[in-house]
Length: 209
Ligand SMILES: N[C@@H](CCC(=O)N[C@@H](CS)C(=O)NCC(=O)O)C(=O)O
Image (cartoon, rainbow, N blue to C red):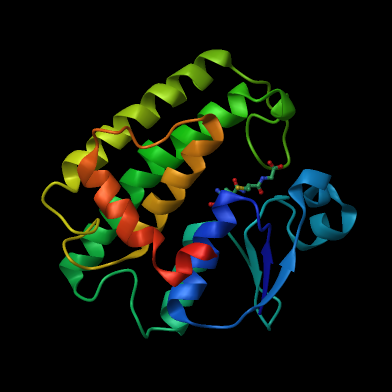
């Protein structure tokens, strides 16, 4: 397997933390997004979507999208399950993972990609150029605030995203909180429950990934 990564980017970080939690070794190739390496003919031939993360399997199959890659790794490396251990836990993990990615991570992407001058005409990743919509940047910031508040409420009565079970939903939430800093959003001082959860997950060795 080969894992195409960019060490500074948040989407591949979700996979890096997942790999670290599984304690597996995968050959990793850096694609420097700051230098536009995702647009090179060489990388386009590997992933026509021109995005990271990307995983190629030994039989030549290529997998794009964080979710597809993590779910594949969960199946081939079932030890230390991160998508749930029972039917109900798997359903809850999927639900909370989708919620935090939609309401948090995507809000961060909306704010950054529609607001940063460096991302002019790159409001969406991938092979097509899209112009920025300033209203979406403003709405993204508002949605980040709401996601922080919702997570704070959630962690009032739950150790992790799903009860006392650390899962891929916690990885997504951690990457969201760190990604929000890119648009100058930090956990508000009075969000004690969210801060307590963050302190516990950021201390895991995998969080350094
Ligand atoms: N939906 C994709 C999103 C991946 C994505 O947004 N990757 C970003 C890095 S965080 C990227 O490759 N950006 C390239 C670009 O902006 O041109 C996934 O889940 O993997």
